[in-house]
Image 1 (tube, rainbow, N blue to C red):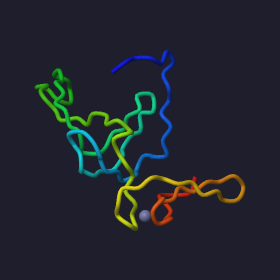
Image 2 (cartoon, protein in one colour):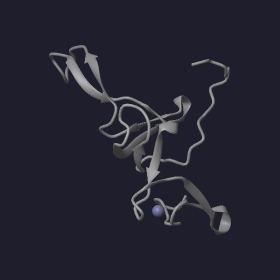
Image 3 (cartoon, rainbow, N blue to C red):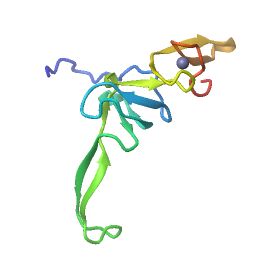
Image 4 (cartoon, rainbow, N blue to C red):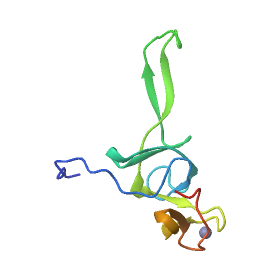
Length: 118
Ligand SMILES: [Zn+2]
């Protein structure tokens, strides 16, 4: 991939921690999980139990023998879509303005609110 941007761009996404997402591309394609972390600087997010990689760890107090552990690796944000709780399908996220500048994320398919008001 070509490296063009000098400044790291923080990915714009409406996905937040706790969202249920489905992976649309890549080796975990079709799988779903809960977002545990959004890493905007890398345009990736961490999904619980998905995209596991083996991490070698040196012996420590917690793991006296060290060894290999499964750890979640980042998945490109562009490869996932949020799953609506009502229509149970991957969807795009719409924004509905509320009073006093508050915003609500909604499912673009059915209009159901996604998560809490923010
Ligand atoms: Zn929906």
